[in-house]
Length: 62
Image 1 (cartoon, rainbow, N blue to C red):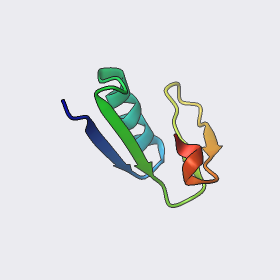
Image 2: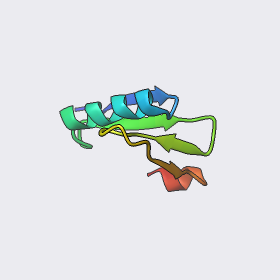
Image 3: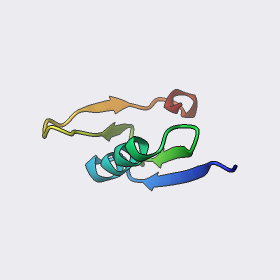
C-alpha cells in the first residue's frame, strides 16, 4: 500500500488548518504532510488565538 502525500503551500492559518484536519482524518501511516512557507514562521489556531513557531532548517520540520 502506498502512502498518500498532502502538499500544503502557505503556512498561514488556512494551510495549517487544512493540514491539521487531514491529520485528524488519516494517521502518519496513511498520509505524509509537507508544508511550504515562504517566511520563517507558520501559524495555526483552533481557538482564535494566533500562535506561531519558527522553522530554522528543513531538518527541523519533521
